[in-house]
Image 1 (cartoon, helix red, strand yellow):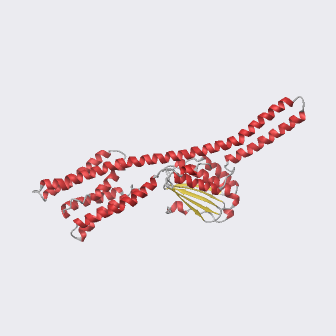
Image 2 (cartoon, rainbow, N blue to C red; image 1 turned 90 degrees about the horizontal axis):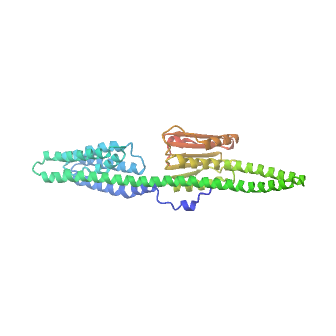
Image 3 (cartoon, rainbow, N blue to C red; image 1 turned 120 degrees about the horizontal axis):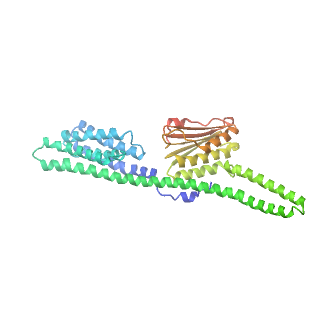
Length: 384
């Protein structure tokens, strides 16, 4: 598959790598700052425990964000940090207990489909109101309370939330670039197919045209020569039909090792982490057909999924490809895989396509060649 791996290797930093970089760069210092603030404000072990809950909740959201999944943790963590803030103000006398909210609030607001401005204003009002409650304990220090417990916490929460909007837009641009690269890879494959089709049919049609023209000239002078030319035309057309079928079924010059390398290049260029497990050498009799399954599945992943991870498992008897990022929708009609299912069946094997819990599995197995390819990774969510 001619997809110019050398060109794809120079694609810019992907979204997945950026998230990993953020995890390594921001998590340690933010955890360190949180630990210092807790140590500075807490007077007893139980005060330190409560204040630390806010820091831990913030770090949990940050870690889940680097993995691309904050949906299940952001609201509980917001509630924890929102509860730690009044505890810090009214019990510990800490004007820094809002630290966890400065991290969690931006992620919570960024996930909202609408009314982000109103929610930001509401949370800022909550921070300010809790801080203002300190006036009940310190009515003689109005300016100090308003500055340390109201103004500074509220401004910091609002600013960090606004910065998150800018950061979110940055990642959207990266995601758009990733999608464009995947579309370009599919387009290149189509161009490759068109080039192969031209190579097969263009030369044959040109020769057929010349032989038919020659037969026209000889039809009244040399019938024997005409018959010979027509037999050659018939043989050329038959051979072209056979080569076109081979091309359509991706058997022409197909090699599983080449397809595997090209698939890895495509996935890595699109920001998708790929892991290959070779449990055994693939039987030579099905090498080309499994290469065809891998090629079709690679195209489907790039076109139809928002994948971040792909696992490819090779055994003597087959291949299994599992990817995440599958849409929460019924199993789509995939014409290419439907055709492959018939061909795999004709060769004594079976092709399985499954979609479950955001994962998509494609497995081609030939039980008569050896042990069946394991499918447990798709259901148990293996660590890839």
